[in-house]
Image (cartoon, rainbow, N blue to C red; front, side, top):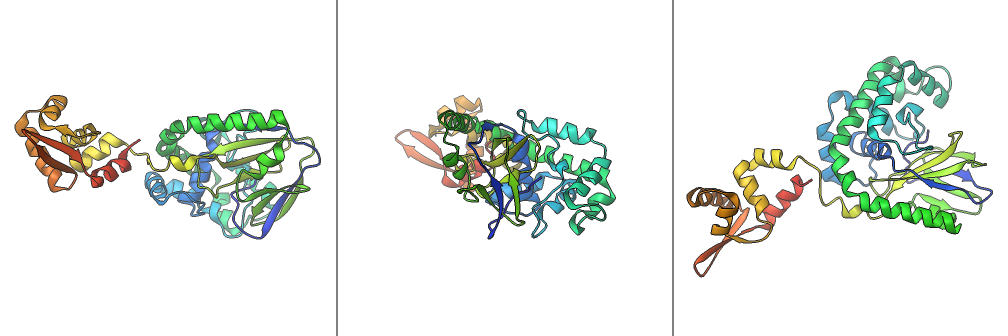
Length: 333
């Protein structure tokens, strides 16, 4: 299986001798893998730093240990166990991927390593996994699960972008113009006279033959690409879905619980209620809290530079500050 590519002068080539058949798969398991590679393994591909930190903080030691081989310098080949459910015949959920990993015999990892790197001792970065394959499988499955717990709300918000991409691929397939589409997937992919060129760290050449090409849009950094050029049924290419930049401004986090832990439950609710400026009396009614209690909490929030108070005639108006907006953005799902 091909792993994430890097910006180098080395290219993998997929030779295409006739108009390819294009299909699309909405498989979030590849999004989880791209985020693991970027945020945990250290192979940076444009994921915003705020998300990298959020994802890394949610994954336990076993998961961190399991993903280390994914960022070995100069290596792009990886065993098929990374994607035991390839997106060639339908959509693949993260839950399905995790279940398959748990059900796969650990000996399969050894076989996949031999298939990827040849018989004998695997490369140094995969030796710890080969020595304890069961532990590696569990660690990788736990990393997938913990990453997905963090990013699933983002995936749900991306549904309009994914629907638009389905339409774009469908129109291209019907009108018979796959070359333009394939060449626009990523800056790391170009379509030339002989077919696809994919920026890589290890060169290789494959013939598409009669196989189809399955496109898998991901929520990942703009330089993230994951490909498999040697699957017997289909070539699949995972790439950043167009427009994903619009989603990074709303990081995923357990908003109520974590914000409450930071400022207290009443003040957290108060900040969330101030989507627009409100008077003290409006807030008291909305929050169902006595005026004296509301004044106390507003004093604390004002001291923290999270709200402003402005008297207009007989009313005092409360508004969130820019500092409060930034704080809420960190905890908003």
